[in-house]
Each structure stands twice: as structure tokens, then as C-alpha cells.
Length: 276
Image (tube, rainbow, N blue to C red; front, side, top):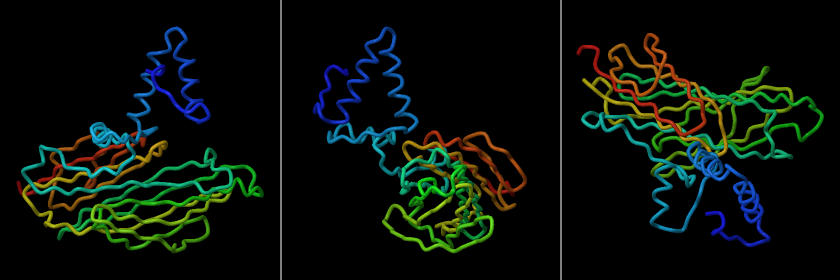
């Protein structure tokens, strides 16, 4: 395969291809190169965009083209109302050296299903910059963060929490018929920690006091990142979880999930009325 692909000899891809070809030529390495390629695709460590209209849709279904997914409830939930939720943080590094290896990142998402047909959510994005040289501007981590949410999400607040302050942030909002895009700048100096907190709500088109209803959350990964996220899904006492798609800590009135962040994931839960 590598021998049949050609790039301009002056391009960066030519150098990459040459290195892969040389590595694959070693005894026993060809299969490892191929498996490594497919592993990178599976974990969204790289993406491919093609002009071929026959192949491109296949890549889109597998998130291999970097496009936004729509998400859908599992087929077993098809006979009852179902909530389609979505989250994808996308971060662009704007720092001097465009490196973030000294920055530890993790996230928390708290979702509450409210009686009356509404979802309340709090997203917390934690950053800790362990760089040892606060005087060097290149050690300050700066970026622009976009939070992609369902189109019907309504932003209540965007705040920055540091050791000393809680500050309201200016943000940009762009809306399409499929997604809401919230964007704002972040700045974490060396030897400091900050948390960015987004509060938002969604109005549902049905009341959750149904005999049976479903909830599906699509957590789409940004290519090239591995950032863990803890998800807590709280629900009223009038309903109980029937079907849970993945391991969860079942605590009174809530389900707690831990997502490693190494790939796009779904959390699906079917609820039933506590009367049943």
C-alpha cells in the first residue's frame, strides 16, 4: 500500500510516507504499522478527509473525518420518547510554543433531569499548569475553547474560577439548526490552576413523567486529545433507571460515569416511572 501512494517529494507527507515505508520494511513491522494506523483511527488520534463521495460517508459514520456527529438513541429505546444530548469541547492552543505537556486537564459534567421537561447542566473544565518557570511567557498556557452543545441549549453563565477569584467571562455564541457553539479564551499561567464553569439548560419536548423514556449523551472526542471526564446524571425520585449502557456507580438519585476520553463515547439510560 505504501509503495503505491505518491506525494510531492517536497511535501511533509512525503517525509512521513518515506519514514513509514522504511519502518514497515523491517522484518515483522508491516503488520504493526497497519494495526497502529487502524488503532489511531479508532481512537480518533488522526482524521482523514477525502473527496471521494462513496468513501467519505463511511468515514463520517466512524468519526474518522473529524466531522460533528448527530447522535441517536439506541434502537431498543425507539418505542418511547428519548432525549438526545451532546457535548464536544474543542480547544485551540494559542500559546507561544503551542505545547501543553505541562498542563493537566480533566472535566466534570453534572446533568440533572428536572420535573416538567427540562435539563440543567454544569460543565467544569479543570486545568493545572505545572510549568516551573512563571517568568517565561512561553510557559503560560493560552487557548480558545469551543463548547459544542445541542442547538436548543441556553447558556446561563460562563465563569473562570481560580484560587482567589470567580470571574464572569465574555463569550461568543454561534447557533445552527444542529449545534450551539460557545467560545471563549482561557489563560492558565505557570504554577496555577483554574476551572472554567459553564451552566446551561435545555427544554425538552416532553415531560419526563412518562411510563418509560430514554436519555442518550454523545461525548464526541476532539482528535488528538485524551482528556477524562466524570459524568453525573441525576434524576427525580419519580423515575428509576431500567437499562444502563455502561458501568456506572448507582447512588441515590444519580448515576456516576467515568469516561477515559480516549474515544468518542455514548451514555444511554432508559428510565421508567417509579409507579411501575
